[in-house]
Each structure stands twice: as C-alpha cells, then as structure tokens.
Amino acid sequence: MPRPTAAQLAYGSCTVIFSTLAMLLLSQTSSGLGIAVIALAALALGVLVAMTVPLPKPRAVAAADGSQAREPVADERVTARREPVAAAVEPVREPTAS
Image 1 (cartoon, one colour):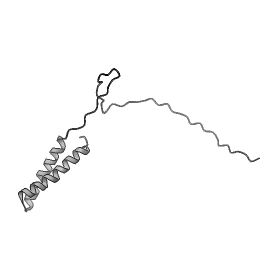
Image 2: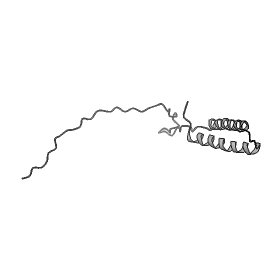
Image 3: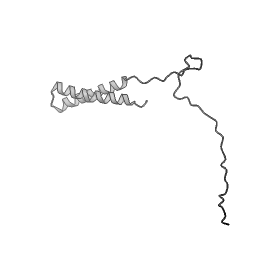
C-alpha cells in the first residue's frame, strides 16, 4: 500500500475536524454514544476524502525530435558502471631544516 501524500493527509485531516464540528453543532448531542457515532462518521468521511484525492501523474519526457516519449517508470533505474580508483598513497615529506 503506497504512503499517503501530504495533500491526502491535509485534506483528510481537515475533513475530519470540520465535519466533526459541523455534525456536533448541528445535532446538539451531549451523549457519549452520539459523540462516538459522529466521530466515527467523520473519520470514515475523512478517509474517503483522503483516498479520492488525485495523485500526481508523472510527467512525460519530451524526445529530441519534439514528440512525446514514453512516461518514466518509477522502478526504472539508470545504472552506470563505476571503476574503482586506487588512491595514490605517498609518504608525507616535510621540508628539512638546513
């Protein structure tokens, strides 16, 4: 399951808070059971809103000839061959006092 984006978290949280306040003010309930039902309904509504926020689509990469190339794949990796570089180790030579 993918992680939620910042927009999904923000929209879901705001929905839960505002819908809870609105339902509590409109229903004027004072019983614990009524408050629990309203809180659960607001939470369900917040999850629904967070899951329906559209995800950003990957940008299409333009080819050199101006046509649209295929869209990049998230799992695609570019690998480069790396050659090990041997470090040149030379003794430190301090100037002699003459």
